[in-house]
Every structure is written in structure tokens, then in C-alpha cells.
Image (cartoon, rainbow, N blue to C red; front, side, top):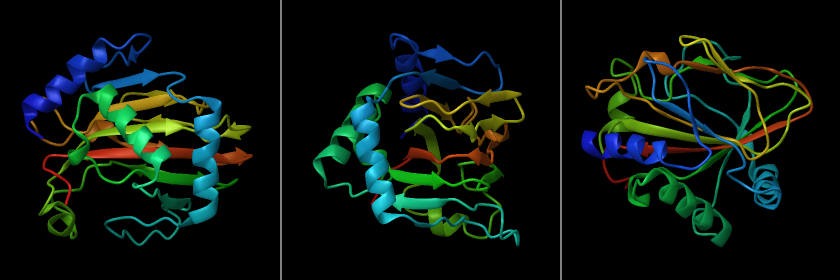
Length: 211
């Protein structure tokens, strides 16, 4: 996915009815409510419940409580998951071949994912392993699947933006700066759920075709 394609994605998102661009010069980020229906969201929640497992991180930092959620790799051959993948591709203008498999996450009370970036740290020990074939992550598309009783917001500390979970709401951002370098301003924290459960799905796109 070239830098021109990355720019094309941002230009396309600007034209989507109802979408809101987060007013920051430091990050390209958009929010779109009601991207998924109640039925679509419920079906994805059921899949996450069925196949969830403890979440992991790429570069271990010694903090065993850094990411305490559970994760589910959605079955990309199933019709409803294919439909979601196609819907995201139509929204972004990014060909499906550049996308990783869609991942679901479940947060119970007290669970969180501390401040992190979605791109792989070029100085990280696992950078070559994760980026040698498909390259770096470009865009992130995340969708909240339910309203959370309390807590569970996503905090972008660098730009002082707090996004509350809301069923069907999509949040997307460019993990890179205009010059193609990774953007530290995308640092975000999936804050602790205080009451109830929180479900999200995330789609990451890469620089090259996903193998």
C-alpha cells in the first residue's frame, strides 16, 4: 500500500456522509457512528464469545498486566465476516488483500490495554518478524460492538482525545505521518472497563499484500 494509496484513503473518508474528522494537526482520525447495525454487532459479539483467548503483545515489556483483554481471530471465510471485510474495504478504498484478518477483543471489568501504538516499533525485537513480508501497518479501523455500562473508553493521550464506546461506532486512524514515518501521536489506551463488558473488532491494513 503506497503512500499515495494511504492519502487516497484519507481523501475518501472525508467524503463519507456523517463522518467526523477529529480536529488535530497531529493525527488523521475519523469517527463514524452506526457503521454496524445491532444485528451485525450482536453476531460478532457471539463469535468473540465462542472463540476468545488471552490477548498477547508483539514486544514483551515485562508488564504482565499491560494487556489483560481476550482476543478472537475471526474466521475470514465465513459469509458475515467476509461481508464486514468488504464493507470496511468499501469505506476505506483499500483493497482487501492489504488487510490482516479481522480481530475481536473482549474486555471484562478491570481489563485494559495500556497505552500503545498499533504500528510495530522499528527498534522492537520482533519488528523483522512481523513486518518482513507485509510491511508496516498503515490504517487502523476499530468498531465498538456494544454500549459499555461504565468505563472502557479509548484515550488518545497525545492529542487529548477520549472516545467513548458506543454500539456500532467506528474509529479509524492513519498510523503514519504524511512523510510515511510512524506517528507516535497515535498512542492510545483501551481504558479499564468498570462495569459490564466491552466488545470491539479491529482491522489493520499493511503496506504490502498480506500473505
